[in-house]
Every structure is written in structure tokens, then in C-alpha cells.
Length: 258
Image (cartoon, rainbow, N blue to C red; front, side, top):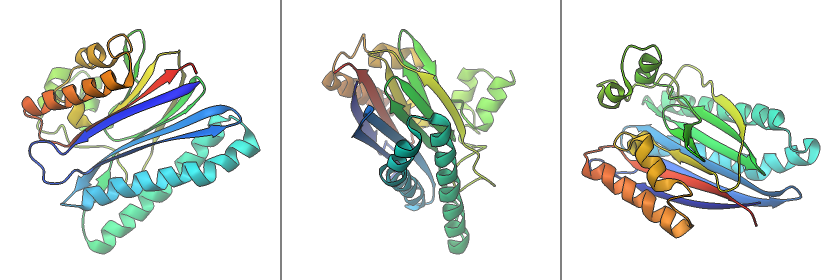
């Protein structure tokens, strides 16, 4: 088992600072390679969103480096235990950011989408409207946007096309630091060889349909990491040309045999 990672992030055409943060860590273990991928879209005034997203990524990366190895030694591959520990870590980060924002009398927050991959299994954690996709024989959205427009879409009040341009499309129902209490949603699943996990911010999907994402980023289209990276850049630039105003980020993890 081997994981290959590529990513691209862009400040976009409107903002002066990139408030998106992301990271990947691949570690060797007695169970083979283990991959953590994290993507956050910060919200707030200049630099405040960057602080929230950057701190969240930093803390989750430290959890993986410092706490996860101990969990693995004590419990083996136990996704229920990993989920409990991650939930506690996320809630602690949420409390810290809310306390800081209250002290500074500012509003700030961040989305969080992360994937923990071990062998051919994955655990996803989600807060906000950044997304995780599985690119396999088709494209499958692994997360549900915790946003006003997605809730209205699920209720049948608006179409997905209307949601993309809705004036309240940036109104989140959940995020780190900005809601009353962070309640991450976790999901679990299995992977096949040559599948890809894609994490991306809302700026990436506003101007790129699921069909366009799959056509450019599936293993059938992007055979190696260089082609995949160029394809991600192409979709980012396409979103900018079509007027996307937000920061734009995407991160792909490919599952390969050694």
C-alpha cells in the first residue's frame, strides 16, 4: 500500500490573503503507510480566518504525530477509538478558537475536512462546507455541506444549481470557532486500488461541477501525480476565469500498490 499526494491552493482573484490551510502527513507503521490529509477554509477579517485555519491544521497534525501513535500501539487499527480521540481534539480546538475570538472581540472560524487513511480504509471528519470526494468508477461525495443552502437543497426547496449562486451560500450551520458548539460528522468506508480521495474548499466546487471534477481528476484521466497536479491547477484556474471570488484549494490522495 502506498499513498501519493498532490495539492494546489490559490488566493483567488478578489482576496488579498489566502485563508485556506492544508497539510498531508504520511507515516510508516507496522501496518504499512498511514496518511492524514487535512483541509480548512478560514473565515473572518483579514488574517483572522488564516489564524483559525492554520491553528486547526497545526493542532490536527500534532494529534497525528503525538497522540495517534500511542492509540495505534494500544488499540491497533480501531477506527472507533480514532474517531473518539479526534472528536475530543476537534472540540478542544473549537473551544480555544472561540475563547480567543471572545477575548479579542472578533468573529473567526474555519471549516474542517480531514481524511485518515489506513490500508484500504478511511475515516472522514467534517465541519462546514469544504468537501471530501471519492473518485473511483464514478464520483461520490463523502461529506454533506453543513450550510444553509445545502440544507435547503436536501429539503427540496432549491436545486443544486440554485444553491451554487444563492446569496446565502456562505452561511454555515457548523464550523470550528463560529458555531455554538462544534459537532463534527464522521464517516467511514473502504477503498479500491487506484481510487482517489479529494478534499477541496467551496471555492473549488462553486465553478466546477462533479462531472468536470471526475473527468479531470479520476485515475482514468490523470494517470500520474504530475498529470493530476496539472489537472487540479487547470480546474483552479478555470474557477478563477469564471469569476470565483474565494480562495481555492484542492488536495488529492491516490491509493496505489507498492
